Image 1 (cartoon, rainbow, N blue to C red):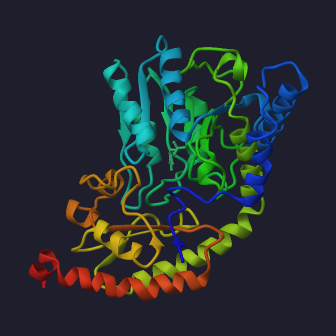
Image 2 (cartoon, protein in one colour):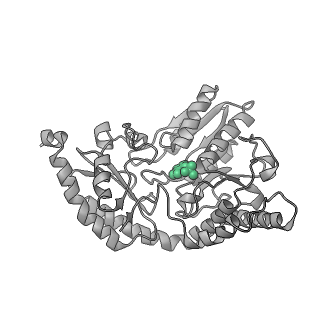
Image 3 (cartoon, helix red, strand yellow):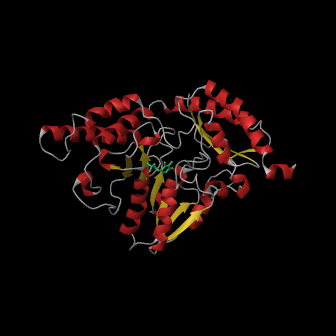
Length: 386
Ligand SMILES: *Cc1c(COP(=O)(O)O)cnc(C)c1O
């Protein structure tokens, strides 16, 4: 039995999505650029998927560009805007709790002569609008703030940020990889110029993403090659992946409010249960957070040890983000919300999907407290504190 509570790391592919993809991995293998009907079938499937993505975001189909991942979309947005607009200015604003796909790209751009302001967040992990206003300069060309955080689930004031960016005539990009399918997103209403998303975070396949680029935005290519994606993102299209993403986003954006209600009930039950354990702190905002995200710190112990013991029971969870686990660096997000190093090390993230049940949460809440107790008994930190 597997108890999968790590949907922020990746999700299980939906059976309907896989069925929709299968023909494009088998008999419908035509190159979408070929003029015979086998190729035209692939082209048509891509067009249909593009329409579905556009509809899910309230964008135009011509504003949707397929990429290989959320990481690629983030890199393209940042580097593409930076290079295409460097005559106007070389200043970029982001937050200090972004995914590494944003933060490491910003570090790279700094080496190329761009300047980056990293906005701090409050103790709940939310960017302050006044800080954003104060950071804006004459030469600011881009604001990139994530829609929802992958570790602590915090949802940022995207509408306010979009309004400010529009008023100041600065491009606004948001990494919405965690938000799509969990929160309703209307790129027009929110004044979003660029948005990244990834299929494997919404019950689609791995290795396929989207960058939404509002019509008229000035952006350079990341890749150069053939004429696919209107020459802006060349590569022979991953037709099966694109078809899967189209189907996955259509399903994921149906009935978001009902799904969110259910996930919130699992979240609340879990938070209430975990906070019964002594010396446990909730990370992130109690309200403005993804419906399926729980993140806590257990003082005096290591998150990694908890994960290993949970794994023996078939429970999949995460400590910090998947990209940082295995390294000894504590999560930059937990440090940014003011958790000291030793407390940040004891973090546990649980991220639910609609396939999770209350019974699964009951199992977790039964098994976890004795694990924490056992680990604390072995912890020198704990013993010296009592
Ligand atoms: C997973 C994730 C990414 C990276 O997406 P990939 O498709 O795995 O490259 C980027 N940003 C956030 C917020 C994520 O959660």
